[in-house]
Structures are given as structure tokens and as C-alpha cells.
Length: 189
Image (cartoon, rainbow, N blue to C red; front, side):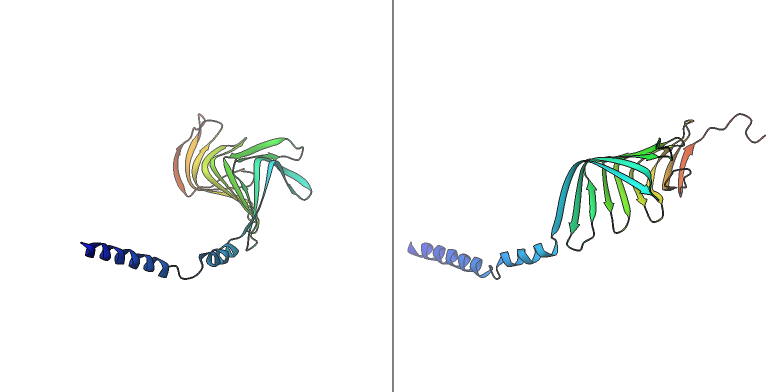
């Protein structure tokens, strides 16, 4: 009767020794090394107004409820707007000519990109563009989107794939898509 108790005790002792053996290096040292590789510096600002100017002329004003400035260890600064942004485009007389709103946005300073995501709506006198993702490339001064819906003031629409437009949205190009347009009576005569 005593043998099963001795065998059980030996099994427990072996399992205990195996668990101690598996504890090799100090896990805290590993964690410190890992944290140095991914260190971030973040700053949060609330109720932010953003002004974009070119040649000392204000071209756009934006508002974000929250702006997180994130600087990873590699120094590539990001500005995240997790609660969305609204940007108004202005003409020479500072009158609003259009707007962009989205539920989320991120600015990549080194790449000079702003990526708008979730419920992105662009409105101006020529069109309304709805999409889930829109990228503004500051170097090219162009907007790009993988897909979206363009609606004209007359009710015409286009489901656009590979959408691109200059920063004033004066025209747009698409790679493919489909839509519906209305022609004036007597068109082509």
C-alpha cells in the first residue's frame, strides 16, 4: 500500500524539478530589452484646431477632439486623431469651399501623408465622395482611395475603384467602376 504513495511523490518531485529547469534566463531582462526596442513617446491634446497654409495663405482649417502625438524610438512622428477630424477648405477670401470629415485619421509626418478612415465624406460644389479610406499625399498634392461613391449635384453617381483627385477635387479619375449619369435634353445634336 505504501508503494503508490512513494510513486506519486516521485512523480510530483520530477514535475517540480522540470518546472524549475525550464525557468532558464531571467524574464525581466528579456522584457527590458524588448521595451527598449518599442519605446514610444506620446502626448495627448484635446480640442485641437489645425491650420494648413501654403505661401502664407490659409488653405484649410481642421478640428479634432483628440490629437495623440506618437514618436516611436525610430523617430518617425505620427499624429493620430482617434475621435475623427473635420477639415474645411478655404478660398482666397477665407470662405469655405469644401470639407472632409472622418471618424479616424492619422498623419505620418515623415511620409507627408494623412490617412482618413471610417465614414469619410468629402463635400464641395462639384461632388460628394463617400469612402472608408482616403489618403492625402502632400508631396503629390493628390487624394487617393481604393474605392468609394461619387455623387454629383444633379444626382449622377459613380461607384469608383482606384479613385484619385487633386487636392481641390476639381476633377477625379477612377480605374474602373460603374454608375449612372444624366444628360441634358438635346445632348449630342
